[in-house]
Each structure stands twice: as structure tokens, then as C-alpha cells.
Length: 220
Image 1 (tube, rainbow, N blue to C red):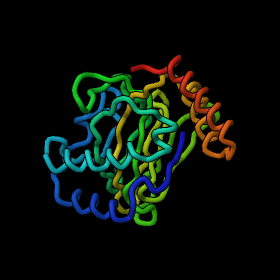
Image 2 (image 1 turned 135 degrees about the horizontal axis):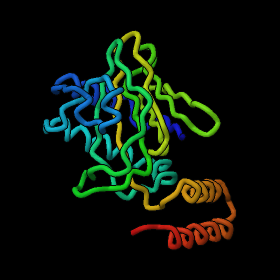
Image 3 (image 1 turned 180 degrees about the vertical axis):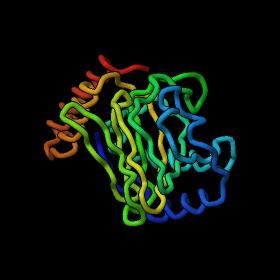
Image 4 (image 1 turned 60 degrees about the horizontal axis):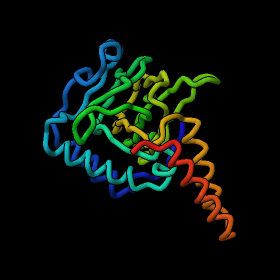
């Protein structure tokens, strides 16, 4: 579970919120899997609306150009992005996301990583935390607006009930070019080490090691 701050700037956030105030919303259960549908209670921006589609493309471009997303997730394919709204009393019970989904460019994709991009300032609502069930217990995320939380799609997770205000978020899934969390974390550590060294020979050796590992583990 990785939290990345400032994926959206304050200007980007204002633009997204302004657009979301103008689009139609539907029952969020329409896009949930069979099991998740039973525990999901929220609203979702209508994905058939061209304004929502354009907003999804705008947000995706911001996410996919962030250097930490590139280094950690190594995206190969993306789902369409969904915009969710939780009002008072809304929540999403414990569930796991589907292993395969429709890809944004067509066809089907394997879902390796899920993400939630928080769009509301935490001071404006109570509850609405993303809670992910990991090996050492539950981890809770309720970061500042503009921050993105990445986690393994196979993890059980939930959104706690909103008790005041409104929680806006953008959610989506991606297929990584590197299958397996352990391999992605090795590459992420090497990437961070390469970025911190000032010795050019060490940088080249780390770059070569990463390139060779990507050839061994990567999927075209």
C-alpha cells in the first residue's frame, strides 16, 4: 500500500470538482461485481457521459506521468476511471475487486493494482476512509485531496461510512508490465537507489541491473 501525495495540483482539483458538479450521477452498484454489489452504497458519475469520459482521460494523464507511479506500478494497461461520491450514510463494505476487467483501450486486462485518488479535503467530511486488509492487519488511508493510494487488487478492502459531508474520489485499476508484487518492489528499490546515488558508474550498473530484470520479468 503506497500513498503518493500531490498527484493532482490544487488547480487540477478545482477543475475536476467543478466538472463533477455538472455531470449526471447513477447508482454505484451498476459497476460492481456480483459480490461487491451487495455491500456497495454510493453514487457514480455516469461513465457514458462524454464529459465524464474526458475528465477520466484528464485525470489518467496526471496519474500516469507521475514518476512514483511509473517506478512502482510500471503500468501497461489501464481500466476506465470511475468517479465516486459518498454522502452521509454511504459506505462500501469489505470486498475484493475482480481479477479481470475491461481495459480502457478495449479488450480485457488483468488487474494487478487498484488505486483511489482522493478529491475531497479530509476536513470537509468525516468517515470515508479507505481500509485495506494486509498481512499485519488493517491499514487505513484518508489522505489530503490530490493524493493517490495504490494497493494490490487482490487485497480485501472497504470504505468506512461517511458520517458528515461528502467524499469524492476517482478509482481505477491497472495491469503492470511486471507480474508479482515482490518483483515490482525489487525494481522499485533499485530505482530509488539509482536516483539517490551520485556516482555515475554506480548509476550505470543499477540501470543495467534494472534493464536485465525487466527483460526477465517484463511482459510486452
